[in-house]
Amino acid sequence: MPLQLNLLHEEILEHRQRQRDPLKLSIYAAMGLGALLVLNYLWTGYRVFESKSRLNSVQSEWAKVEPKVTAAQKRAEELNGIIKTTKTLDEFINKRFYWAPMLEKVAHCVTPNIQITALEGTADDDKGVTITLDGVAGGREPRGVAEDFRQMLLEQIGKAEPSVKVEFKTLEDLDTTVSVGGNTVTTAHFGVVIALDPFPKPPEPTGPERKSRPKKEES
Image (tube, rainbow, N blue to C red; front, side, top):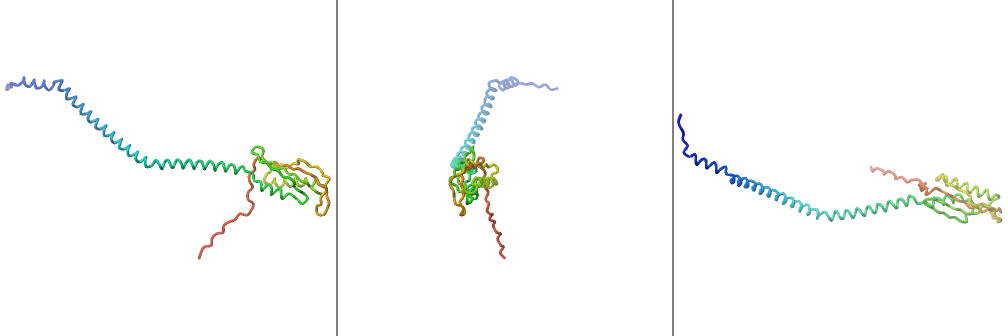
């Protein structure tokens, strides 16, 4: 077996010691760490720059859209106000009492031997509708004429309002006489009170509904 002699073992040992020098290793580690920090800083800076760019783009788009959004919000507030006003008016209309149909029914009940001298009506949310009629009835039995008038009122108004009440407030004979149909008859003074529940529903139209005729096809 041949014998090998290493004449450079001292230099090799010194070279290995220099490679394992803690200071050099620390410098290498610091350089690596510094490089990582620089890369991290550059990456963070890039992300910040990209975020600022997006922010500027969003702000630019918002600046264009903001006037339209503000106008839309104002318009929405105006529409909400109109809707609230409309609802209030609808409630007011739904609760309104229609006097014309009621007076028309009263007028249909007035016969030639009945004369209305005073009429008063009130409508209240809680108390309902009250109509007071004062008049004079003439006939051989004026009290019976006044009672017939009260029954007619109860029948006519009760068709639309079953809960209606028609009662005499006063009914008394008078000493005066009147001429009805060429005959002289005695008279009686009466006062009738018509009471309805709070705000009955308005009557539906009784006239015939107009229907549109179908158009003829052209030949």
